[in-house]
Image 1: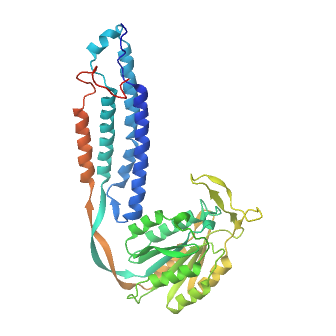
Image 2: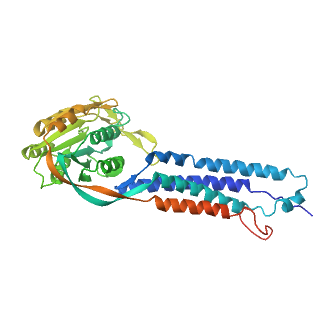
Image 3: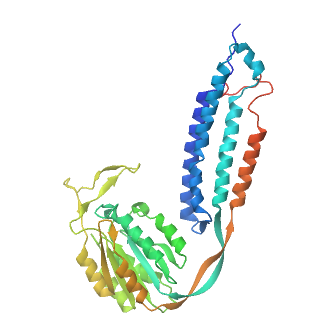
Length: 384
C-alpha cells in the first residue's frame, strides 16, 4: 500500500503570494489616483509612513521560505507513514488564508498610521493677495525633451514652485491645447492645487493645437467678478501653432487691468516630439505626411508680443531649469487686495476603518489553524 506524502503545496503557495502582491499594488495604485482625481480634499496626516508599505511584501518572501523549510523538515522523516500521526492535518489552504490575513492586516495597520483624512468643513477667511490664473499648454509638442525631462514636466515643476511661493493669493489652473477648460477653479487651497497639478498630462484633452487666446479668454471669465483687485494670468507654453487671436485676448486682459505674463517652454532650435504606446514606451517620433520628423521649436516672438500687449514679462526655460524668480518677484510686488476665500478648516480622520480592519485580520490569523481536524476528509485545490 502506497504512503501518501504529506506536505505543503509550495507551488500553490508561491503562486498565491505573487498574485496577492500584483493585485494589492494594482488596486492600491488605482485607488490612489482615483482619490487624487475625484477627492481633491483628501490629505494624509503622516505621508512619510507610506514607505512602510514597501516593507509589507517582505512578508510574502519570508512566508515562502518558511513553508519551504517546513517541507524539508517533513521530508527528513525516515518513515513517511508516521508523518500524518506526528504532524496531523497539514493544509495548504489554511496556510494561505493565514498568510493573507497577516499580510493584509499589517498593510491596513500601516495605512491607519498614514491616516488619510478628508476635508469636511469649510470656513471663510479674509486674506490679502492677488488672483492668479495659470494657463498650461498640454498639447503633444509639450512632450519634447529640450526641457528635461519634458517641456510639460518642466512646466509642472515651475508651477509647483510658484504655488509654494504664494502667500495669501488665490490661484486657478486652466489647461489648453486645441481648446481650453478649467482644471481647478480659483482657490487659496494650495495643497488642492498641487494635487490637481499631479493629474495633468497630454491625454487630458483629445483636441490638439495651441489655443492660447481661448485659454486667456477663459482665464478672464474665471476670475471672481466680485473682486475688483489685482489679477494676473501666466501662460506656460511653447507657443507653437497658435491658432486663434491670442494678441486680441491679451489686449482684452490689459483693458480690464489684468497683467499677462508668459513662460516660454522649449528651445529656439527645437526638438522632435516623442510618440508613446499605451504601455508608456517610446516607439519613435512624430512625422509629417512626407515621413519627415517634425521638430517643434519655441515661438518666442509670438510670446513676446503677447506679454507686451498684456503688460507683463516673459521668462524662458532652458535645459532642466525654468527661471521663474523674476516672474514671482513681479507678481509679489503687485498690491494685494482683501479677498474673501474659503478653505477647509476641519478634516475628518479615516484611520479608524483601516485600524479595525487590520486588527480584525490579525486576530483572524491567530484563530485559523494551519491543520485540519480530519485532514483525510477535507478537500481543497491547494492541498495536493
